[in-house]
Length: 142
Image 1 (tube, one colour):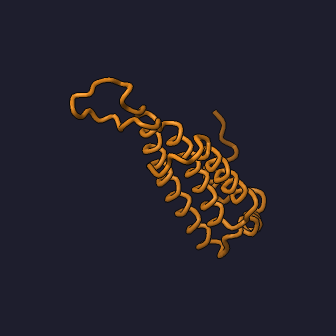
Image 2 (tube, rainbow, N blue to C red):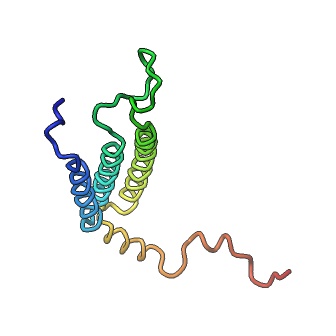
């Protein structure tokens, strides 16, 4: 197999490097699209780590073939299930983040998170325009 010459810890090291790159991108960039990309790189690193820990050299996927029922012949299916579940959740979260980013861009005409924060404070100094409708009118008590 083409992976036989690679150290068993190489995938763990690669996932740590990927996670570091994603975390650095998430923390240091002000552009919201770059933050979303950093978040997705971090997700990918976690999936690589889980998949590498679930793989055992010489074992097969847990699908019974040729009447082999011995559990020692198969890998653990739980890490693969966690990775698949994580990918589905990650796609959903990414879609939500992109939708929120589009709405923020439409309102503030910027993808810079500092600029959006500054403009949102100028829009509503003090109270939000929605906080008044949820407060009880003055003078009414129970």
